[in-house]
Amino acid sequence: ASAPAAPAGSYQERIALAASEPAAFWGPLARDVLVWDTPYHTVSDCDFRSGRIGWFLGGQLNVSVNCLDQHVRKSPESVALIWEQDEPGT
Image 1 (cartoon, rainbow, N blue to C red):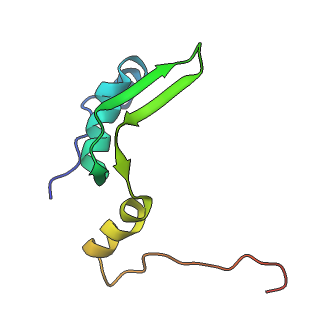
Image 2 (image 1 turned 45 degrees about the horizontal axis):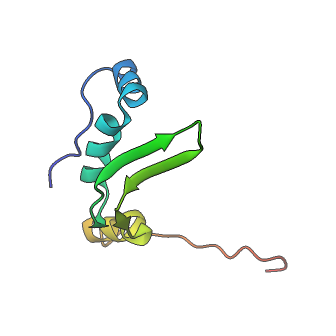
């Protein structure tokens, strides 16, 4: 697999791109890094004045696949998850 598409430029240039053109910054990263069950059709649709915030519209993904499964496939001998019960008295 190829490396994820990271926006070119210095750290400060990438910050500026993320602020000025969020779709150009986040779109390629989300497309290349995350596993989508259904691809998104729009990176963002946000209007802060009205409080409408939408990211990756139309897209569906499985958090378990993205957080665990893809790493298990790459390194099956490595620990994928450590779970610790958090209940009083145990």
